[in-house]
Image (cartoon, rainbow, N blue to C red; front, side, top):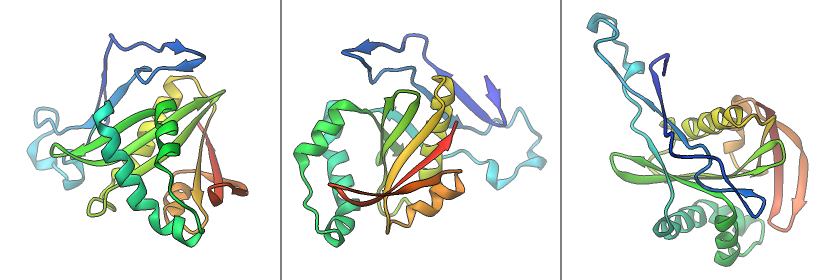
Length: 198
């Protein structure tokens, strides 16, 4: 299936499953890859914006936990310090075990992490983490758009996420259609709860 240069790759062997009331990590995984097919458009019409996206999103495996925890801790360390919080790897591990987890790669190198859970009629984006040196290159936007598509495919009504009130990533979320649902003070510090309709 093709749409505006996007090839959606669906695996017929992956099915949505319930286990102890939760959907498995293998829930209807559909990865999108932007590719350039010179047979579709004359070379003279080539636009640099049509070049292939250098991203590959795959389902995480147990060995990815070390990378995911280290990246998330590194990215969040400044916010934890400012909000007088202590990072707890055990809590991150518990959240990891309850989430659908994915690793973003570029040229075969892991550069990001996406974690999410399905809660009622909402897809909760737990983490969008991009490694330093790979930001502002469309990786975060790619992950958010992937979540938006998955939410539609699952028949959900809403996406939600939480972000530290002083995190500049909130600007990206606003551009992607998220709106503040009111600030909250939680055990993890001052955070902003944001939602958008599917």
